[in-house]
Length: 334
Image (tube, rainbow, N blue to C red):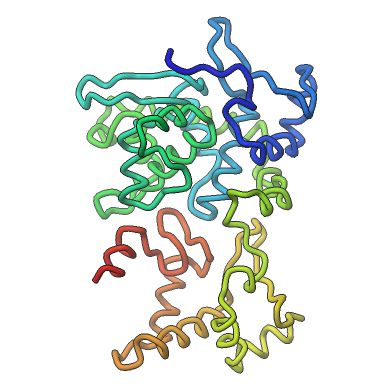
């Protein structure tokens, strides 16, 4: 095997390590195993000596990854279950595909070619594995799960069709061509069993509240939204405040200039009110499309349909308007 780590610290950056320790389930599991915070943490080993992640560990890795990069778009239990059926949660397993001549690597069995394509074509650039020397980073759990989750998200809308969870799972493990073939049916049955096991082990509410303060402040987070002011330019915020309906809504909810909070649902997902969405649409149209007959009500309605006004979008649709990276890149070039 080309790569092997003895400790979690060998394949995790310090921010991620702090997040792992901050989770009470992981902390208890590690402490019960004799690990100490501030010391290197041993990776679990099976009877054959292969490193693997426990169900507790993979669920926290999946939850952190989803909260950072795919909030409102992917289910962490789905990602955790995919990792188990793809590799048995083993970190360093390789599988060579003779047909494609590609090697699937790591806990979610991601090929370097797919990971590089996801970065190059779909904008998943949080981790750079373009260089040959960086390929082994795919053995790092957070990096492998990031690209595996990105591929699963792409499968949800591949070939310009909305796909079901069953299709995605069967395609992820067995390939797109076999996703509807009877030979891949056992894959989904196994997946459902694993997912139910993970759900019985830990309830979703405990993952939704996973170290929120640490996650928000970690160097690679980027998706924990609390204040408009941290993500919107001064000019845009002035434009929002100048809208009478927004001014009334924000004033009534106790917002102040320089400290305007996003609304959040019960799962702590940030969303825009209908008043806010309409105001954003009006500002964008007045600046860029005033002569093109675009109606703010139409844009607001599209946002409602595409994302239910969730800032990060839903399922495979990215953001308020459900615009994916290739479309945005094409529009910017045109």
